[in-house]
Structure formats: structure tokens, C-alpha cells
Length: 370
Image (cartoon, rainbow, N blue to C red; front, side, top):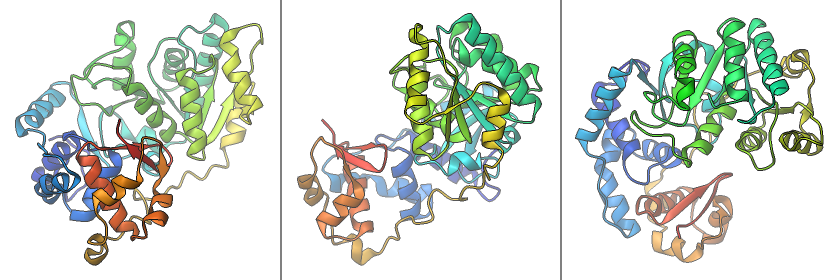
């Protein structure tokens, strides 16, 4: 199965956890709720068909053969699984909303326990921005910081290269399976990150880097770091998504200002107008982050719902579905309007999600699927 599981996690339970997460309509929130409800992934798998049936649809669990093939592919890639309750799982990421329950990894997980800084920016970055990103990353790595980025062209690649030159303190988070290098010209760099730093992937081995996977990758980059530095970015770019996610997590957001004549600087300049911290040197980054305590909670949420059977029986998926539309609404508001207990509402939402009728959005909001 590979290392990285909690010390008392059996092979059967580890297999069940992978199978649970690979089953239809299971995301980080529903995965966590199922483990809270049933105690083990083995028990949760047994309950899935009935739960989805209450939501109004038949349900088919991920095939065992698919999970076996995934494990074989992972071993072939020289990688291992990292479960949410492993001592090696990055504590700062675990405290973030929607933290991936299972990651795959190659390299040294201890790098995620150091102070981490995310560096992101334009793929078509200017030569000056590439040089600046490389120099910043080199200086930060030399001071003991781990530089986190996404192994994309431009600023990402420069950040990894600078960090490797400055002492190897870098984490690459990719949108594909851990056995696939993207972009192709970064195959060598990705291998260096895996050998000298830490390479992380949320998607199963063999998964191509599809467009829908990049926002999920960005949330991991933001979640790993005490702060995110944007070096150069156009408006509405993926780098600004990472910065927004970092701000929503309560992390520091920093930006390097640029010329108003260069569209690639407009995103950074807008971030600064919106409250991001203007930085001009690695010393500015270190000064901003040196007071961050980096001590998150050790579980997904300390206020996870308590599953009281009497409460659960008080809510029905159909009743909640009638209150929902395709416009997102907060779960807290739904609880207030429904008159049912929090645990009952959460279970009914879970049943709707398993049936493919519910979509979860950032900030604890939900809506009906289209």
C-alpha cells in the first residue's frame, strides 16, 4: 500500500479509504463526514448504496480492481499515499477547508513542516519577472523556507529552480497523477523536485492534467503555505485564484508591483489595491511571515457535527432539495431555515451529494446540480 498512513491503519482500511474517495460524488467534505458518521471507511462503503438511495439515485462503489490497478501504478512510480491522519500529512494544509483526504507523494514530507511560502505567477512571464522569482526563491530557501509552486511554465518553474539552487527546499504540486509530467519540458525539473524536494498530487496515477484539476491544485498550494506571493499575473489568471484562496484561508497574500503598461502586471497591481502586501525583496517576505505561528488544528474541524440518531431521523433529503436551487446557499442558512438539527441537515445533504443532486462550493455553500 505504501507508507504515509497512520501507524494503526490496517491494509484493509487503507484500501477502503482509497476506494471510498474514488467512488462517485465523494469529495473531501463528504469523505470526512462519512468517516465521522461510520468510524471507518470499511463501514462507510457498506452504507453508501443505502445513503444514495435515500437521495433518490442508485449507486455503484468504485470497483476493487480499479483501486488495485491504481496502487500498482503508484508503486511503479516510486510514490506512496499520504492519508489525512498520517503524522507526515502537512499540518497547515490539514487546517484548510476541503483539505484533500489522500495525497500521493514522492520526496521528503518534512519539507512541508518547515515555514512554507507559495510563489505563483504568469506562465508567459517576462524575463525580468522570471529572474526575480528565481532570486526570491533562492534567498527564501537559503533562509530555511520551503518554496511551494505548481511546476507550470514561467514563474512556477523559476521558483522551483531558485529554491533547488538555494538548498532544495521546494514542494511541487501538480494537477495530474504523480506519474505524469506537465508541461513536458518540465519533466527533468519535476524529477528533480521529487528527488531533492517534495512532489504532491491529489489525482490518481495516470490522470492527465485536465483544466478542472488546476483550481483544486491551486487550493493545495495555498493551503500548504503561510503566505502566497504573486510575482506577475494577468487579471483573471490562475495565480489570482491561488491568491484569493490563500486570503480566504486567512493566510498572507503578497504581490510584487509592476509596470501599468504591461498587462502581465495588472493582476499584481490589482491585488495590492485590494489589500495584498506590496513586497520588493525576499526580506519583505520574511519580515511579514516570521510572526506566523504555523500551528493549525490537528483534525479537519474541531466542531465536526455529532451524529445523533434521533436528530438524523428528523430531516429528509426531499425536504432539503425543495429548499435548494442552483444558486449557492450557505449550509448554516439552510439549517436555520429547515428547523432541523445540524447533523440531520448534513446527513441529508450528504445523501443528495451521493445521488449526484448536490454541488458543494467554497465557503461552506451548496446548491442543486444543474
